[in-house]
Length: 420
Image 1 (cartoon, one colour):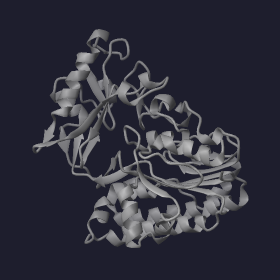
Image 2 (cartoon, helix red, strand yellow):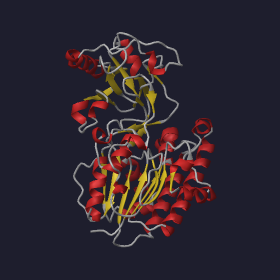
Image 3 (tube, rainbow, N blue to C red):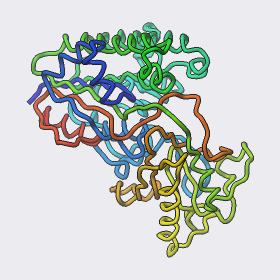
Image 4 (cartoon, rainbow, N blue to C red):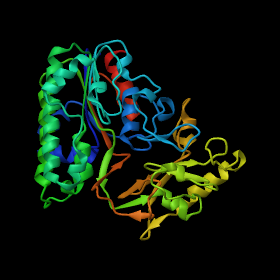
């Protein structure tokens, strides 16, 4: 049994990138670590969205048990879009166990909740004061010039601004984390690097293409993450457990599929185009609509204001929608790898609030659920997109890892290490 555990998250990083960069010498410390523990692919959540995946990582639960299905949802019995935060999480994160905890930059933990220790919320945290527990740490955070995230609007236009902000955010986060490491008693120390996800989305092609003008900067960022891991690793005690995890993978984006446009084209969705109305653009006769990225909801009578699908009709509509997406092609290639039904992937008391169907895209396909998109297919300004089966898990500790781990396995493994 281990006395303490350190969990380092690297958001949006696929197994194949960690495997590649560690063997190339870009991440030499992680390459050494591989000899001391288990390094394996890990399946992300469905859908493969950070808010869903990190919620499963910190609770060990399925979305049907923790109730988070995406960065957005509709308020009950409405078409009003809302943005669930940590107050919506229905399962306890592991730091509600007995012990002392230091939790830094875990996505979707805003607003920071009370715990025996310290919590600094990660993306999305609109107000730093509400992102910190205890609030007495706010002054110290400001002294470290702590940044939750980069300015993504500038980053879209100016890659060098992106790198500057990524490194600044990384350095402030690492420095603050070392401060807490020494000042705060803890049994579990968790730190998540999210700049890796931003870099992957904006410049995944810089990783894939060695001739890309920002290829070396891409590698430098991951080299710095490796150094940060080393600095924490060298502070650990021999009896401490170490976890390094990602929440989902990443790959090159080739084309967007605007799911609501496809639903409209196939006759399932009738909508207006008023940008002020959002999902209230859904009109009478709509049988199905989508939220990001590929969550499809049957417009059930009694569940939604203009729901028209009767209880006895739901299965038939589900089958029609499944058939439409299973046969969807782009230039002769399947666009959708799999269509999951709710009851096949979710279990728990909050399953009914989840989507009726979830689309899993084929390689290179990026799903979009915006209600106002105008064409079924278009190009994305972002270079990288999420993947579901290529997250990664590294563990060096007193626990046994199953052959095909998922994000829901992290907390049980942590509990095994610490004897909870």
